[in-house]
Amino acid sequence: MVGESGDDRTARGQGESGHRLVPHTADVRIEAWGASRERCLAEAVLGMVGCFADVSAARPTAVERVRFTEAGDDELLAALLDEVVYRLEVHGQVPVDVETDEADGGLEVRLAVAALADVEIVGAVPKGVSWHQLRIGPDAYGWSCAVTVDV
Image (cartoon, rainbow, N blue to C red; front, side, top):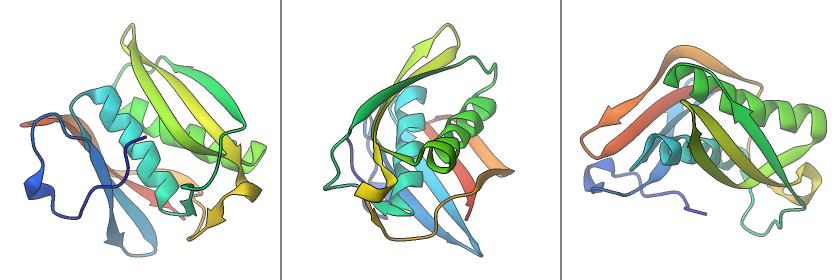
């Protein structure tokens, strides 16, 4: 699992991945980056989890596999983060690690999950993903994305 990087994105180099939380009124703004689209999406999940839970001591109890066939990258980002919210609300599961692979234009995801009761809650649990100012795409170092999460 790749942890949260420092707040200085100017130090980002080729092939690095990470995420950070950005102050945002009444919500949480997540910025994530990676060498590939898939790594960037995985970092977005880790950033979302990091906004409300400390999973550093949690051990996964299951691995859940999900396949996304959304055509656009924006849709993939929103659908992946919505899946995290769904698993929180319906199954009480928190991803403690994530692996993503390209799959015919879509995305194959493996979420190593722990029970919500087994992680330390450090912030408001996300309720949804906002499409306002959602972005994902290639940049000079690989891929980056930004998304606002409703809490």
